[in-house]
Image (cartoon, rainbow, N blue to C red; front, side):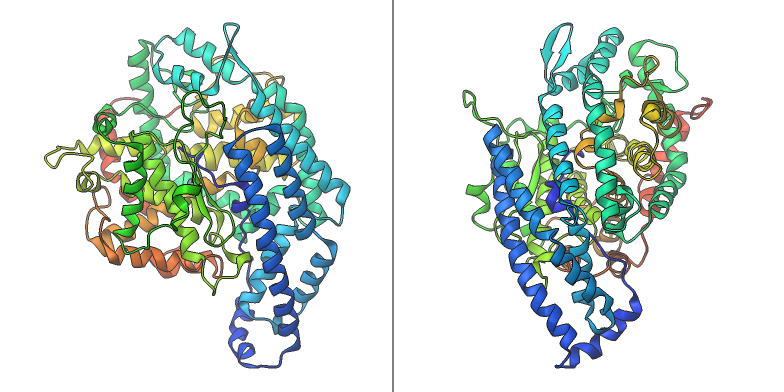
Length: 605
Ligand SMILES: [Zn+2]
């Protein structure tokens, strides 16, 4: 579910830490016509914005080609375009002027400071103050991606795809077979280990070049926080949700022990769970399976219904070019073209060339995913306006983008909405607990312990604490045991490098806490919409056709990155980032689980 990432470049968002004192000065400075520093910054930023937008478009088009028609030539063209954009944004002259202007920030408007801070964060990804280092990093990343994409999984000597492995884990009830599949899925790790060791040092080197302690510190700067603050935020999520997680863990291990006819384990063996990393626990809530209700639908209907979700709330239709330019459906049988299988939404020119890459089929997963991707699309459309300069046409922080996608997916799975669009018959009697349990298992609650726990902490260890590579796998499984309550089927030595089997560890590093924050953010918005606007229960509500909900969402989207994300969230919902809404959403499920688990030892030792 959470592989629905934006292209990397779109995600390279940032929110600068702003001194409010300077922001308060801005109005009087704006009023003064003759401010030579502001004039100098305006002139500089107008050149930078137009060049950035133009180069961004060239790179996005090359990336789009590489993603929709995978060939070595398209990959090479995409890398070249990436280098060109990097050479511009990381140019030493540009960095120098940006830094000099920021020294004079007292004389600049808030909007100007935001653009300059953002520019520095973009430059920090490819500082041409050290071209050899930057080039080495780009080349090492290309090499790592190539190993990742071309790795051949084998099962009993036969080549299988990652999808084959997933399908087997979804279906098989034979534990010996499941273990063989799970172990096969981990064979990419050793192949990726050396590259990851090298990349850790190159990425840390790049971050240091611009004055950051390490690469993790550079990534969390997008939120205007330090590494410790980011880890604390994620630990707080886990602390508050822990009673629910322990109940879910207990219920799940009993359910799986029954399914596989095994004694109830202390920690859950990793190969018992359908997901290769146990990040989501799908397929355990039979009463919420919507598959039969999509049999008379078409893939086109699925995408159109996602657009209607937004137009019904008063949003414009998507640009007409969206339909012919996007790549929305599976490659036709017999067509040799290979396309990237990850669903994504693209803002190619940071204006009206907006597209989506999907392979939509009429089923519940694609129904949710299409709504999710259009959440991104409507965010792009919202902040594409003259008041938002191209440098700030981005989510208020990276989690806001993912959060709007996830919010749309959550709203699309509410039973009253499903009835109103005709997926479910009007007289359908929903088992509310089954639906809530389904939400909680995937992505819901286990995902937090995977993203806030294992992923965030392990990556902080390797980047910020320089954990020796000889301890990487041991540390990984220590976190899996502690945070997730999961264990491997047999001991995993250092030769395996299991973290590297996760795509994001290789190609979107020190970033994964973003998905946890997006889940928390999504629930805060949903809670506000359901309770304050719709006056309906958050577990069963319907956004369809409600203009007031549309206005609420649009107001946040329109800001892009022109305002601090904390202020936007507080203005919209009246509260800071908090798991309160998530806890309340699942409160009825917690009571149900406590009854189901009565008499069982809870959690693991
Ligand atoms: Zn997304």
